[in-house]
Image (cartoon, rainbow, N blue to C red; front, side, top):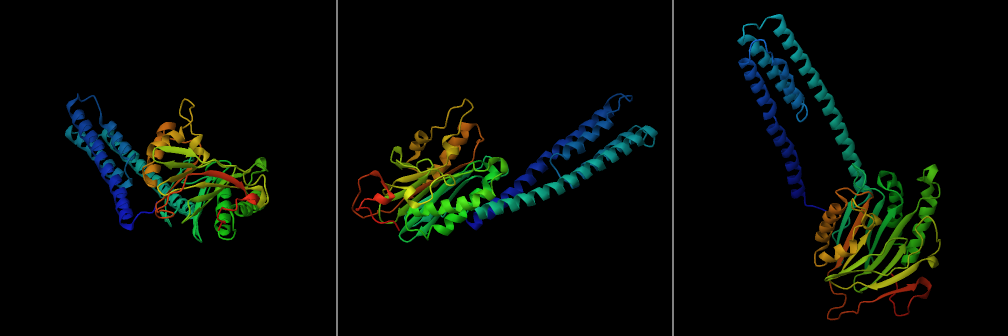
Amino acid sequence: MVHGGGVAARQRFAGLRQPWQSSHALLAVPLVLIVVITVVDLLVPADVHLGPLLVIAPAITASFAGPRLTGVIGGLTVAAQAFIGWHFGVLFSRNVMVQILALTVLSCLIVCFCVVRERRRKELDQVRTVAEAAQHVLLWPLPEQLGPLQVACLYLAAEDEAQIGGDLYAATRIDGGARVMIGDVRGKGLAAIGEAALLLGAFREAAHKHTTLPELAAGLEQSVTHYLPEFEPEEEAGERFVTTLLLEIPDADPLTRMTSCGHPPPLLLHPGEAVAVPVHPAPPLGVGPTGPEDYTLDVFSFEPGDTLLLYTDGVIEARDPHGAFYPFTQRAAQWTDHSPESLLHHLRRDLLAHVGGRLADDAALIAIRRTLPAHPGRRHRRTFHADGFRHRSQTEPPSR
């Protein structure tokens, strides 16, 4: 979702302040160790030497602080060892001088380690920043409002350090309505990003050119068939495909059109109920049909106040530690009165709790709520029906 500049600035400031506060709070640990070890060494018998244990202080500091603070703690340990030697009148003895030299060398080595670690961390942060920017450019956030539609989206990547993977979604305004796509590339994580980018680019280019969804699906099939082999590893040649769901949602008509290419059907939420929309899927993109006549156009009623929930199979195939699938329909029915953003917030938390905190596959969800009456003063009967592209009902409004 898109956040305001002030909120983002406060979040960045809080993110910078929190590590600073935590590291300075932890600094008390090595300081207390230096004091305790020094005092105990002064109190124990003269033949017991605890001074060498002071090296623990800079070693602990290096785990949470940078080279500067680690160097300060290292200097304090050397000073503490010197104080112990001075207290017993043996500061310039061979034994104490060797201990001081050893602490100095070890502290310098720890500081050098911190310098190398900080340099690597900065390089990793820079790479991560570039990767995040590239991923955001690839998978644009959906607008919060598309005409009379409230929209929210959620992406949960299975691979560490990735914000997107093989799942994808896009939406665009057309004359008198909106077209939405959600899809799932075979595979997961960063390895599937190339195929996802291919389909997203094809959709953004073709969504405004084709009159009907079957024509759009056929156009996407041509793009995928032509370019997909370039992304296929040799060991998976001919085995890569993309499941896709295309929707066309008019602004002033509750009848919503849908074409599925092997993708799970959406859920239609109205107060206290969640039902799967009947769908007649064609094979996924990249393996089957080539012409508009090979795709089915399903039509259903999407009334004001209803919420349409699109998802990928990473949601419905998520398992708990005992192997039980996530009961997506039942859980979604608990929050039918929530806004799209709140609905996805609850589903995200519930889904991650079900799987124990980490998904085995990428997961994407889109929640769409119709907020304005399609025809003021008039409600439509909820209907679900599917007409073949070449046998569309004469009473059905033409696709835009």
